[in-house]
Amino acid sequence: MNIGENILLALASLKANKMRALLTMLGIIIGISSVIMITTLGNALQGSVTSTFENFGTNLIELYIAYKDDSTSRPVDKKDLISDEMIEIFKEQYGEKILSISTSSDVGKGKIKVGRSDVKLNISGTNEGFCESNAIEITNGRFISEKDIKGAKNVVVISDKAVSKLFPKGTDPIGKELKIKTDSGTLPMTVIGVYKSKVSQMMSAMMMSDSETTNAYIPISTAQRFMNSDSGYRYFDFKAAQGLDYKKFAEETASFMNERFYKDNAYFQIKSYCLEQQLDSFMQVLDVVKIVITIIAGISLLVGGIGVMNIMLVSVTERTREIGVRKALGATNGAIRMQFIVESIIICLVGGIIGILLGLLLGNIGALIIGSPAAPSISGIITAVTFSVAIGVFFGYYPANKAAKLDPIEALRYE
Image 1 (tube, rainbow, N blue to C red):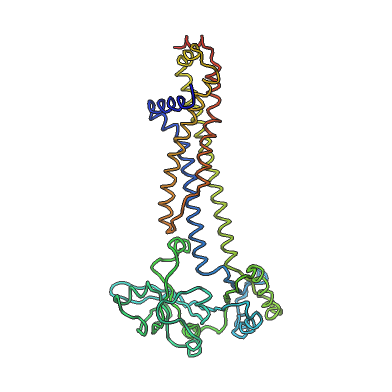
Image 2: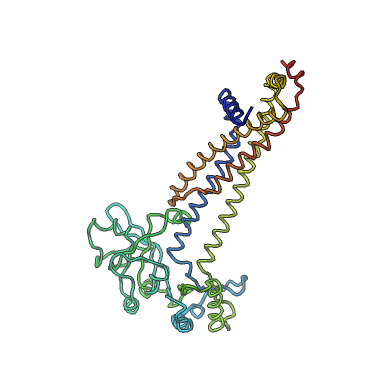
């Protein structure tokens, strides 16, 4: 009996025992579908995160005030803050290595009443460099300027999402007056610019932010006046020039700030953090999660393989008389062994194909929910198919070998 005949015989056996075959394949289906689904979702997550970080730029670096000793609990005084003079000296020191510097001050949450609903905003005071450093795309009007900051003007830049809720379609929002209500009072503002919202659904969910809430930017001097806060910053961001080693440059700039301004400060120092580090950290965590879930899926495949072995042993018992007849007609041990190995491979292969299709379906549904469609891993599919065949051979060999070694006289006597 050749391979083709063995395959047809195996398919006929599956067709004759559909429910038993499906239950046998269940472990294989679950394991393979899990592997494919995880690789597809992993690709979608990586694509979404990478895209979001690229919008900001991996060359974005933050310098911030931190305690020199973790046991210290002294609050930050005005003299501990990063001043505008410090930032100017920093800018002069690094010149063309820095594309832009941004400072910001959190004002808090605000809302604008529109009919019976509210338009929710996160309000931040910013400087003119904030736009470039954070890759904000202005679609109408302009961003905060140095003149706005010097005059502490009541101007605001809002998102296109906020515009769509605040004004009738086709209305130019530039120059329109808004009254933003906050916990600290009401801010009368004039719209000078509109930016394009870019945060993905997945990143919005990860940051636990309300997808209906968008940012609004006002001059940092206006924010400080409104909040009665000191002039100075707990941190500032800057965008490094392309081609630098961002992690190394981040450490270098922090060392400069410490040596120049915080050497004699007993409590505080400057530390650095770059977006590239955050991206690398996230990818490492994601890789670990993928490996752990793949191992769990591998355990499911192992259980599925044991199920295949069990059902093949049952099949050998049920077909003992058939094996005896075939041996009496001249079938060799190798032919009998091959028949049952092929049947085991077919069970695992069919289960693997169903698992791949199910995994692709679930993976793509998950990717669409994340908001970042991703192609499945071709290498993952090939690995899944190869693994299915390997399971068939490995767990099918023992039952096949047992069938091959049956004594033909004893097999013919079997009832």
